[in-house]
Image 1 (cartoon, rainbow, N blue to C red):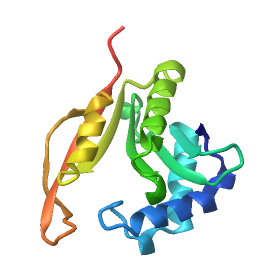
Image 2 (tube, one colour; image 1 turned 30 degrees about the vertical axis):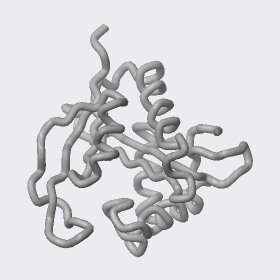
Image 3 (cartoon, rainbow, N blue to C red; image 1 turned 90 degrees about the vertical axis):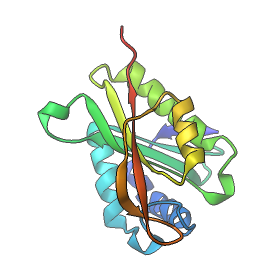
Image 4 (tube, rainbow, N blue to C red; image 1 turned 120 degrees about the vertical axis):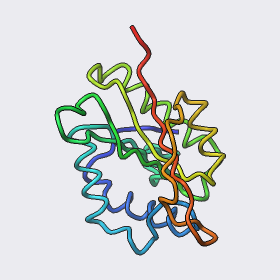
Length: 170
């Protein structure tokens, strides 16, 4: 598997990936219809400017099978934080290690190339216990609950679970 920094030329492929993942109920917070090229352009440019954006391919010239990004929240008071973390792995490739490879490389780059970053944040829906356990294995800690924040797949509302990875003390 090849993990590399995304480029602006990956915009259309990333949008296609996100639409495929969003088509699965609960795959992403957004529906497939809400995935526009403008949405992808926004997070791609912010991530390349102030954060990290990586794509996964099976081969050097193969299609994008996964993407992960996070970026600076903006205000100087949060300059040490990367947030808005989102990962998407194509449904045909889920459970095969692409997500772990993307997260591992993301955290490696932050540890080795971004000494200014001390915290990485993400939010997971409470019903996605598999993802929460996965994030915990990577070093993310649960920091609370946002009650009734996200519409549940089966109807009603459920909690979003804020989690964070903190750089180890030197």
